[in-house]
Image (cartoon, rainbow over all chains, first blue to last red; front, side, top):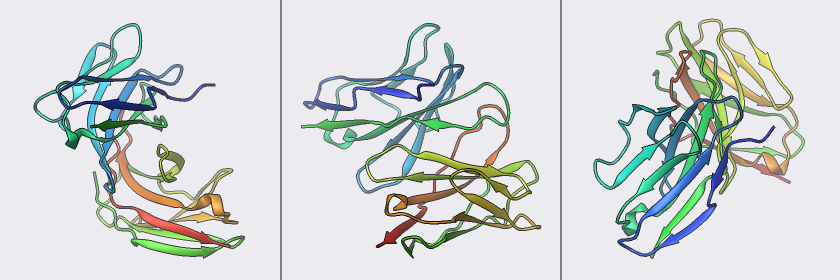
Length: 114
Length: 111
């Protein structure tokens, strides 16, 4: 039973480029969460999505960041016009659609902006 | 979600039990206690969770006090690979309820 799959694991972008991070939830999971961990800092919630719906984006920066979870395919976290401060580990997590649903995390995508 | 308080760091000798405490004095009746850990440069790993009864799985045991205001995660025979940051999180047991991570406890297992 494959876990939460994230790719790419490592991504290098120049300032001003776009970064796209992909997340395939565990089989049978319809809820996806994105977290960010800046260097030497804690895990911060960004956004929670269900299929085709953004449920809670209270942790998303107001500009340049967007997320989607289409009916088919992985969830995408998109960062436009990246800046050095976007360098971080981005973790995706997933859970089933019912109460008592444990959240499982992927291994993360490390974004470095040069 | 209720706030949790954990020691910043702890040490444990390899092969001994590691007992990690957590205070959650403002926990409400529909909130569970979850434990995750994060080994350096890896994603958070689910360990165990519970509501009011003690729980045990292949990784650890969770002891929750009767008043539910504190809990202890027990790793019965710590190994060097258990060195990680351990997070105690209180979370509502509703569909889609997210996890809010605090600072956690840095557990270092020494040979």
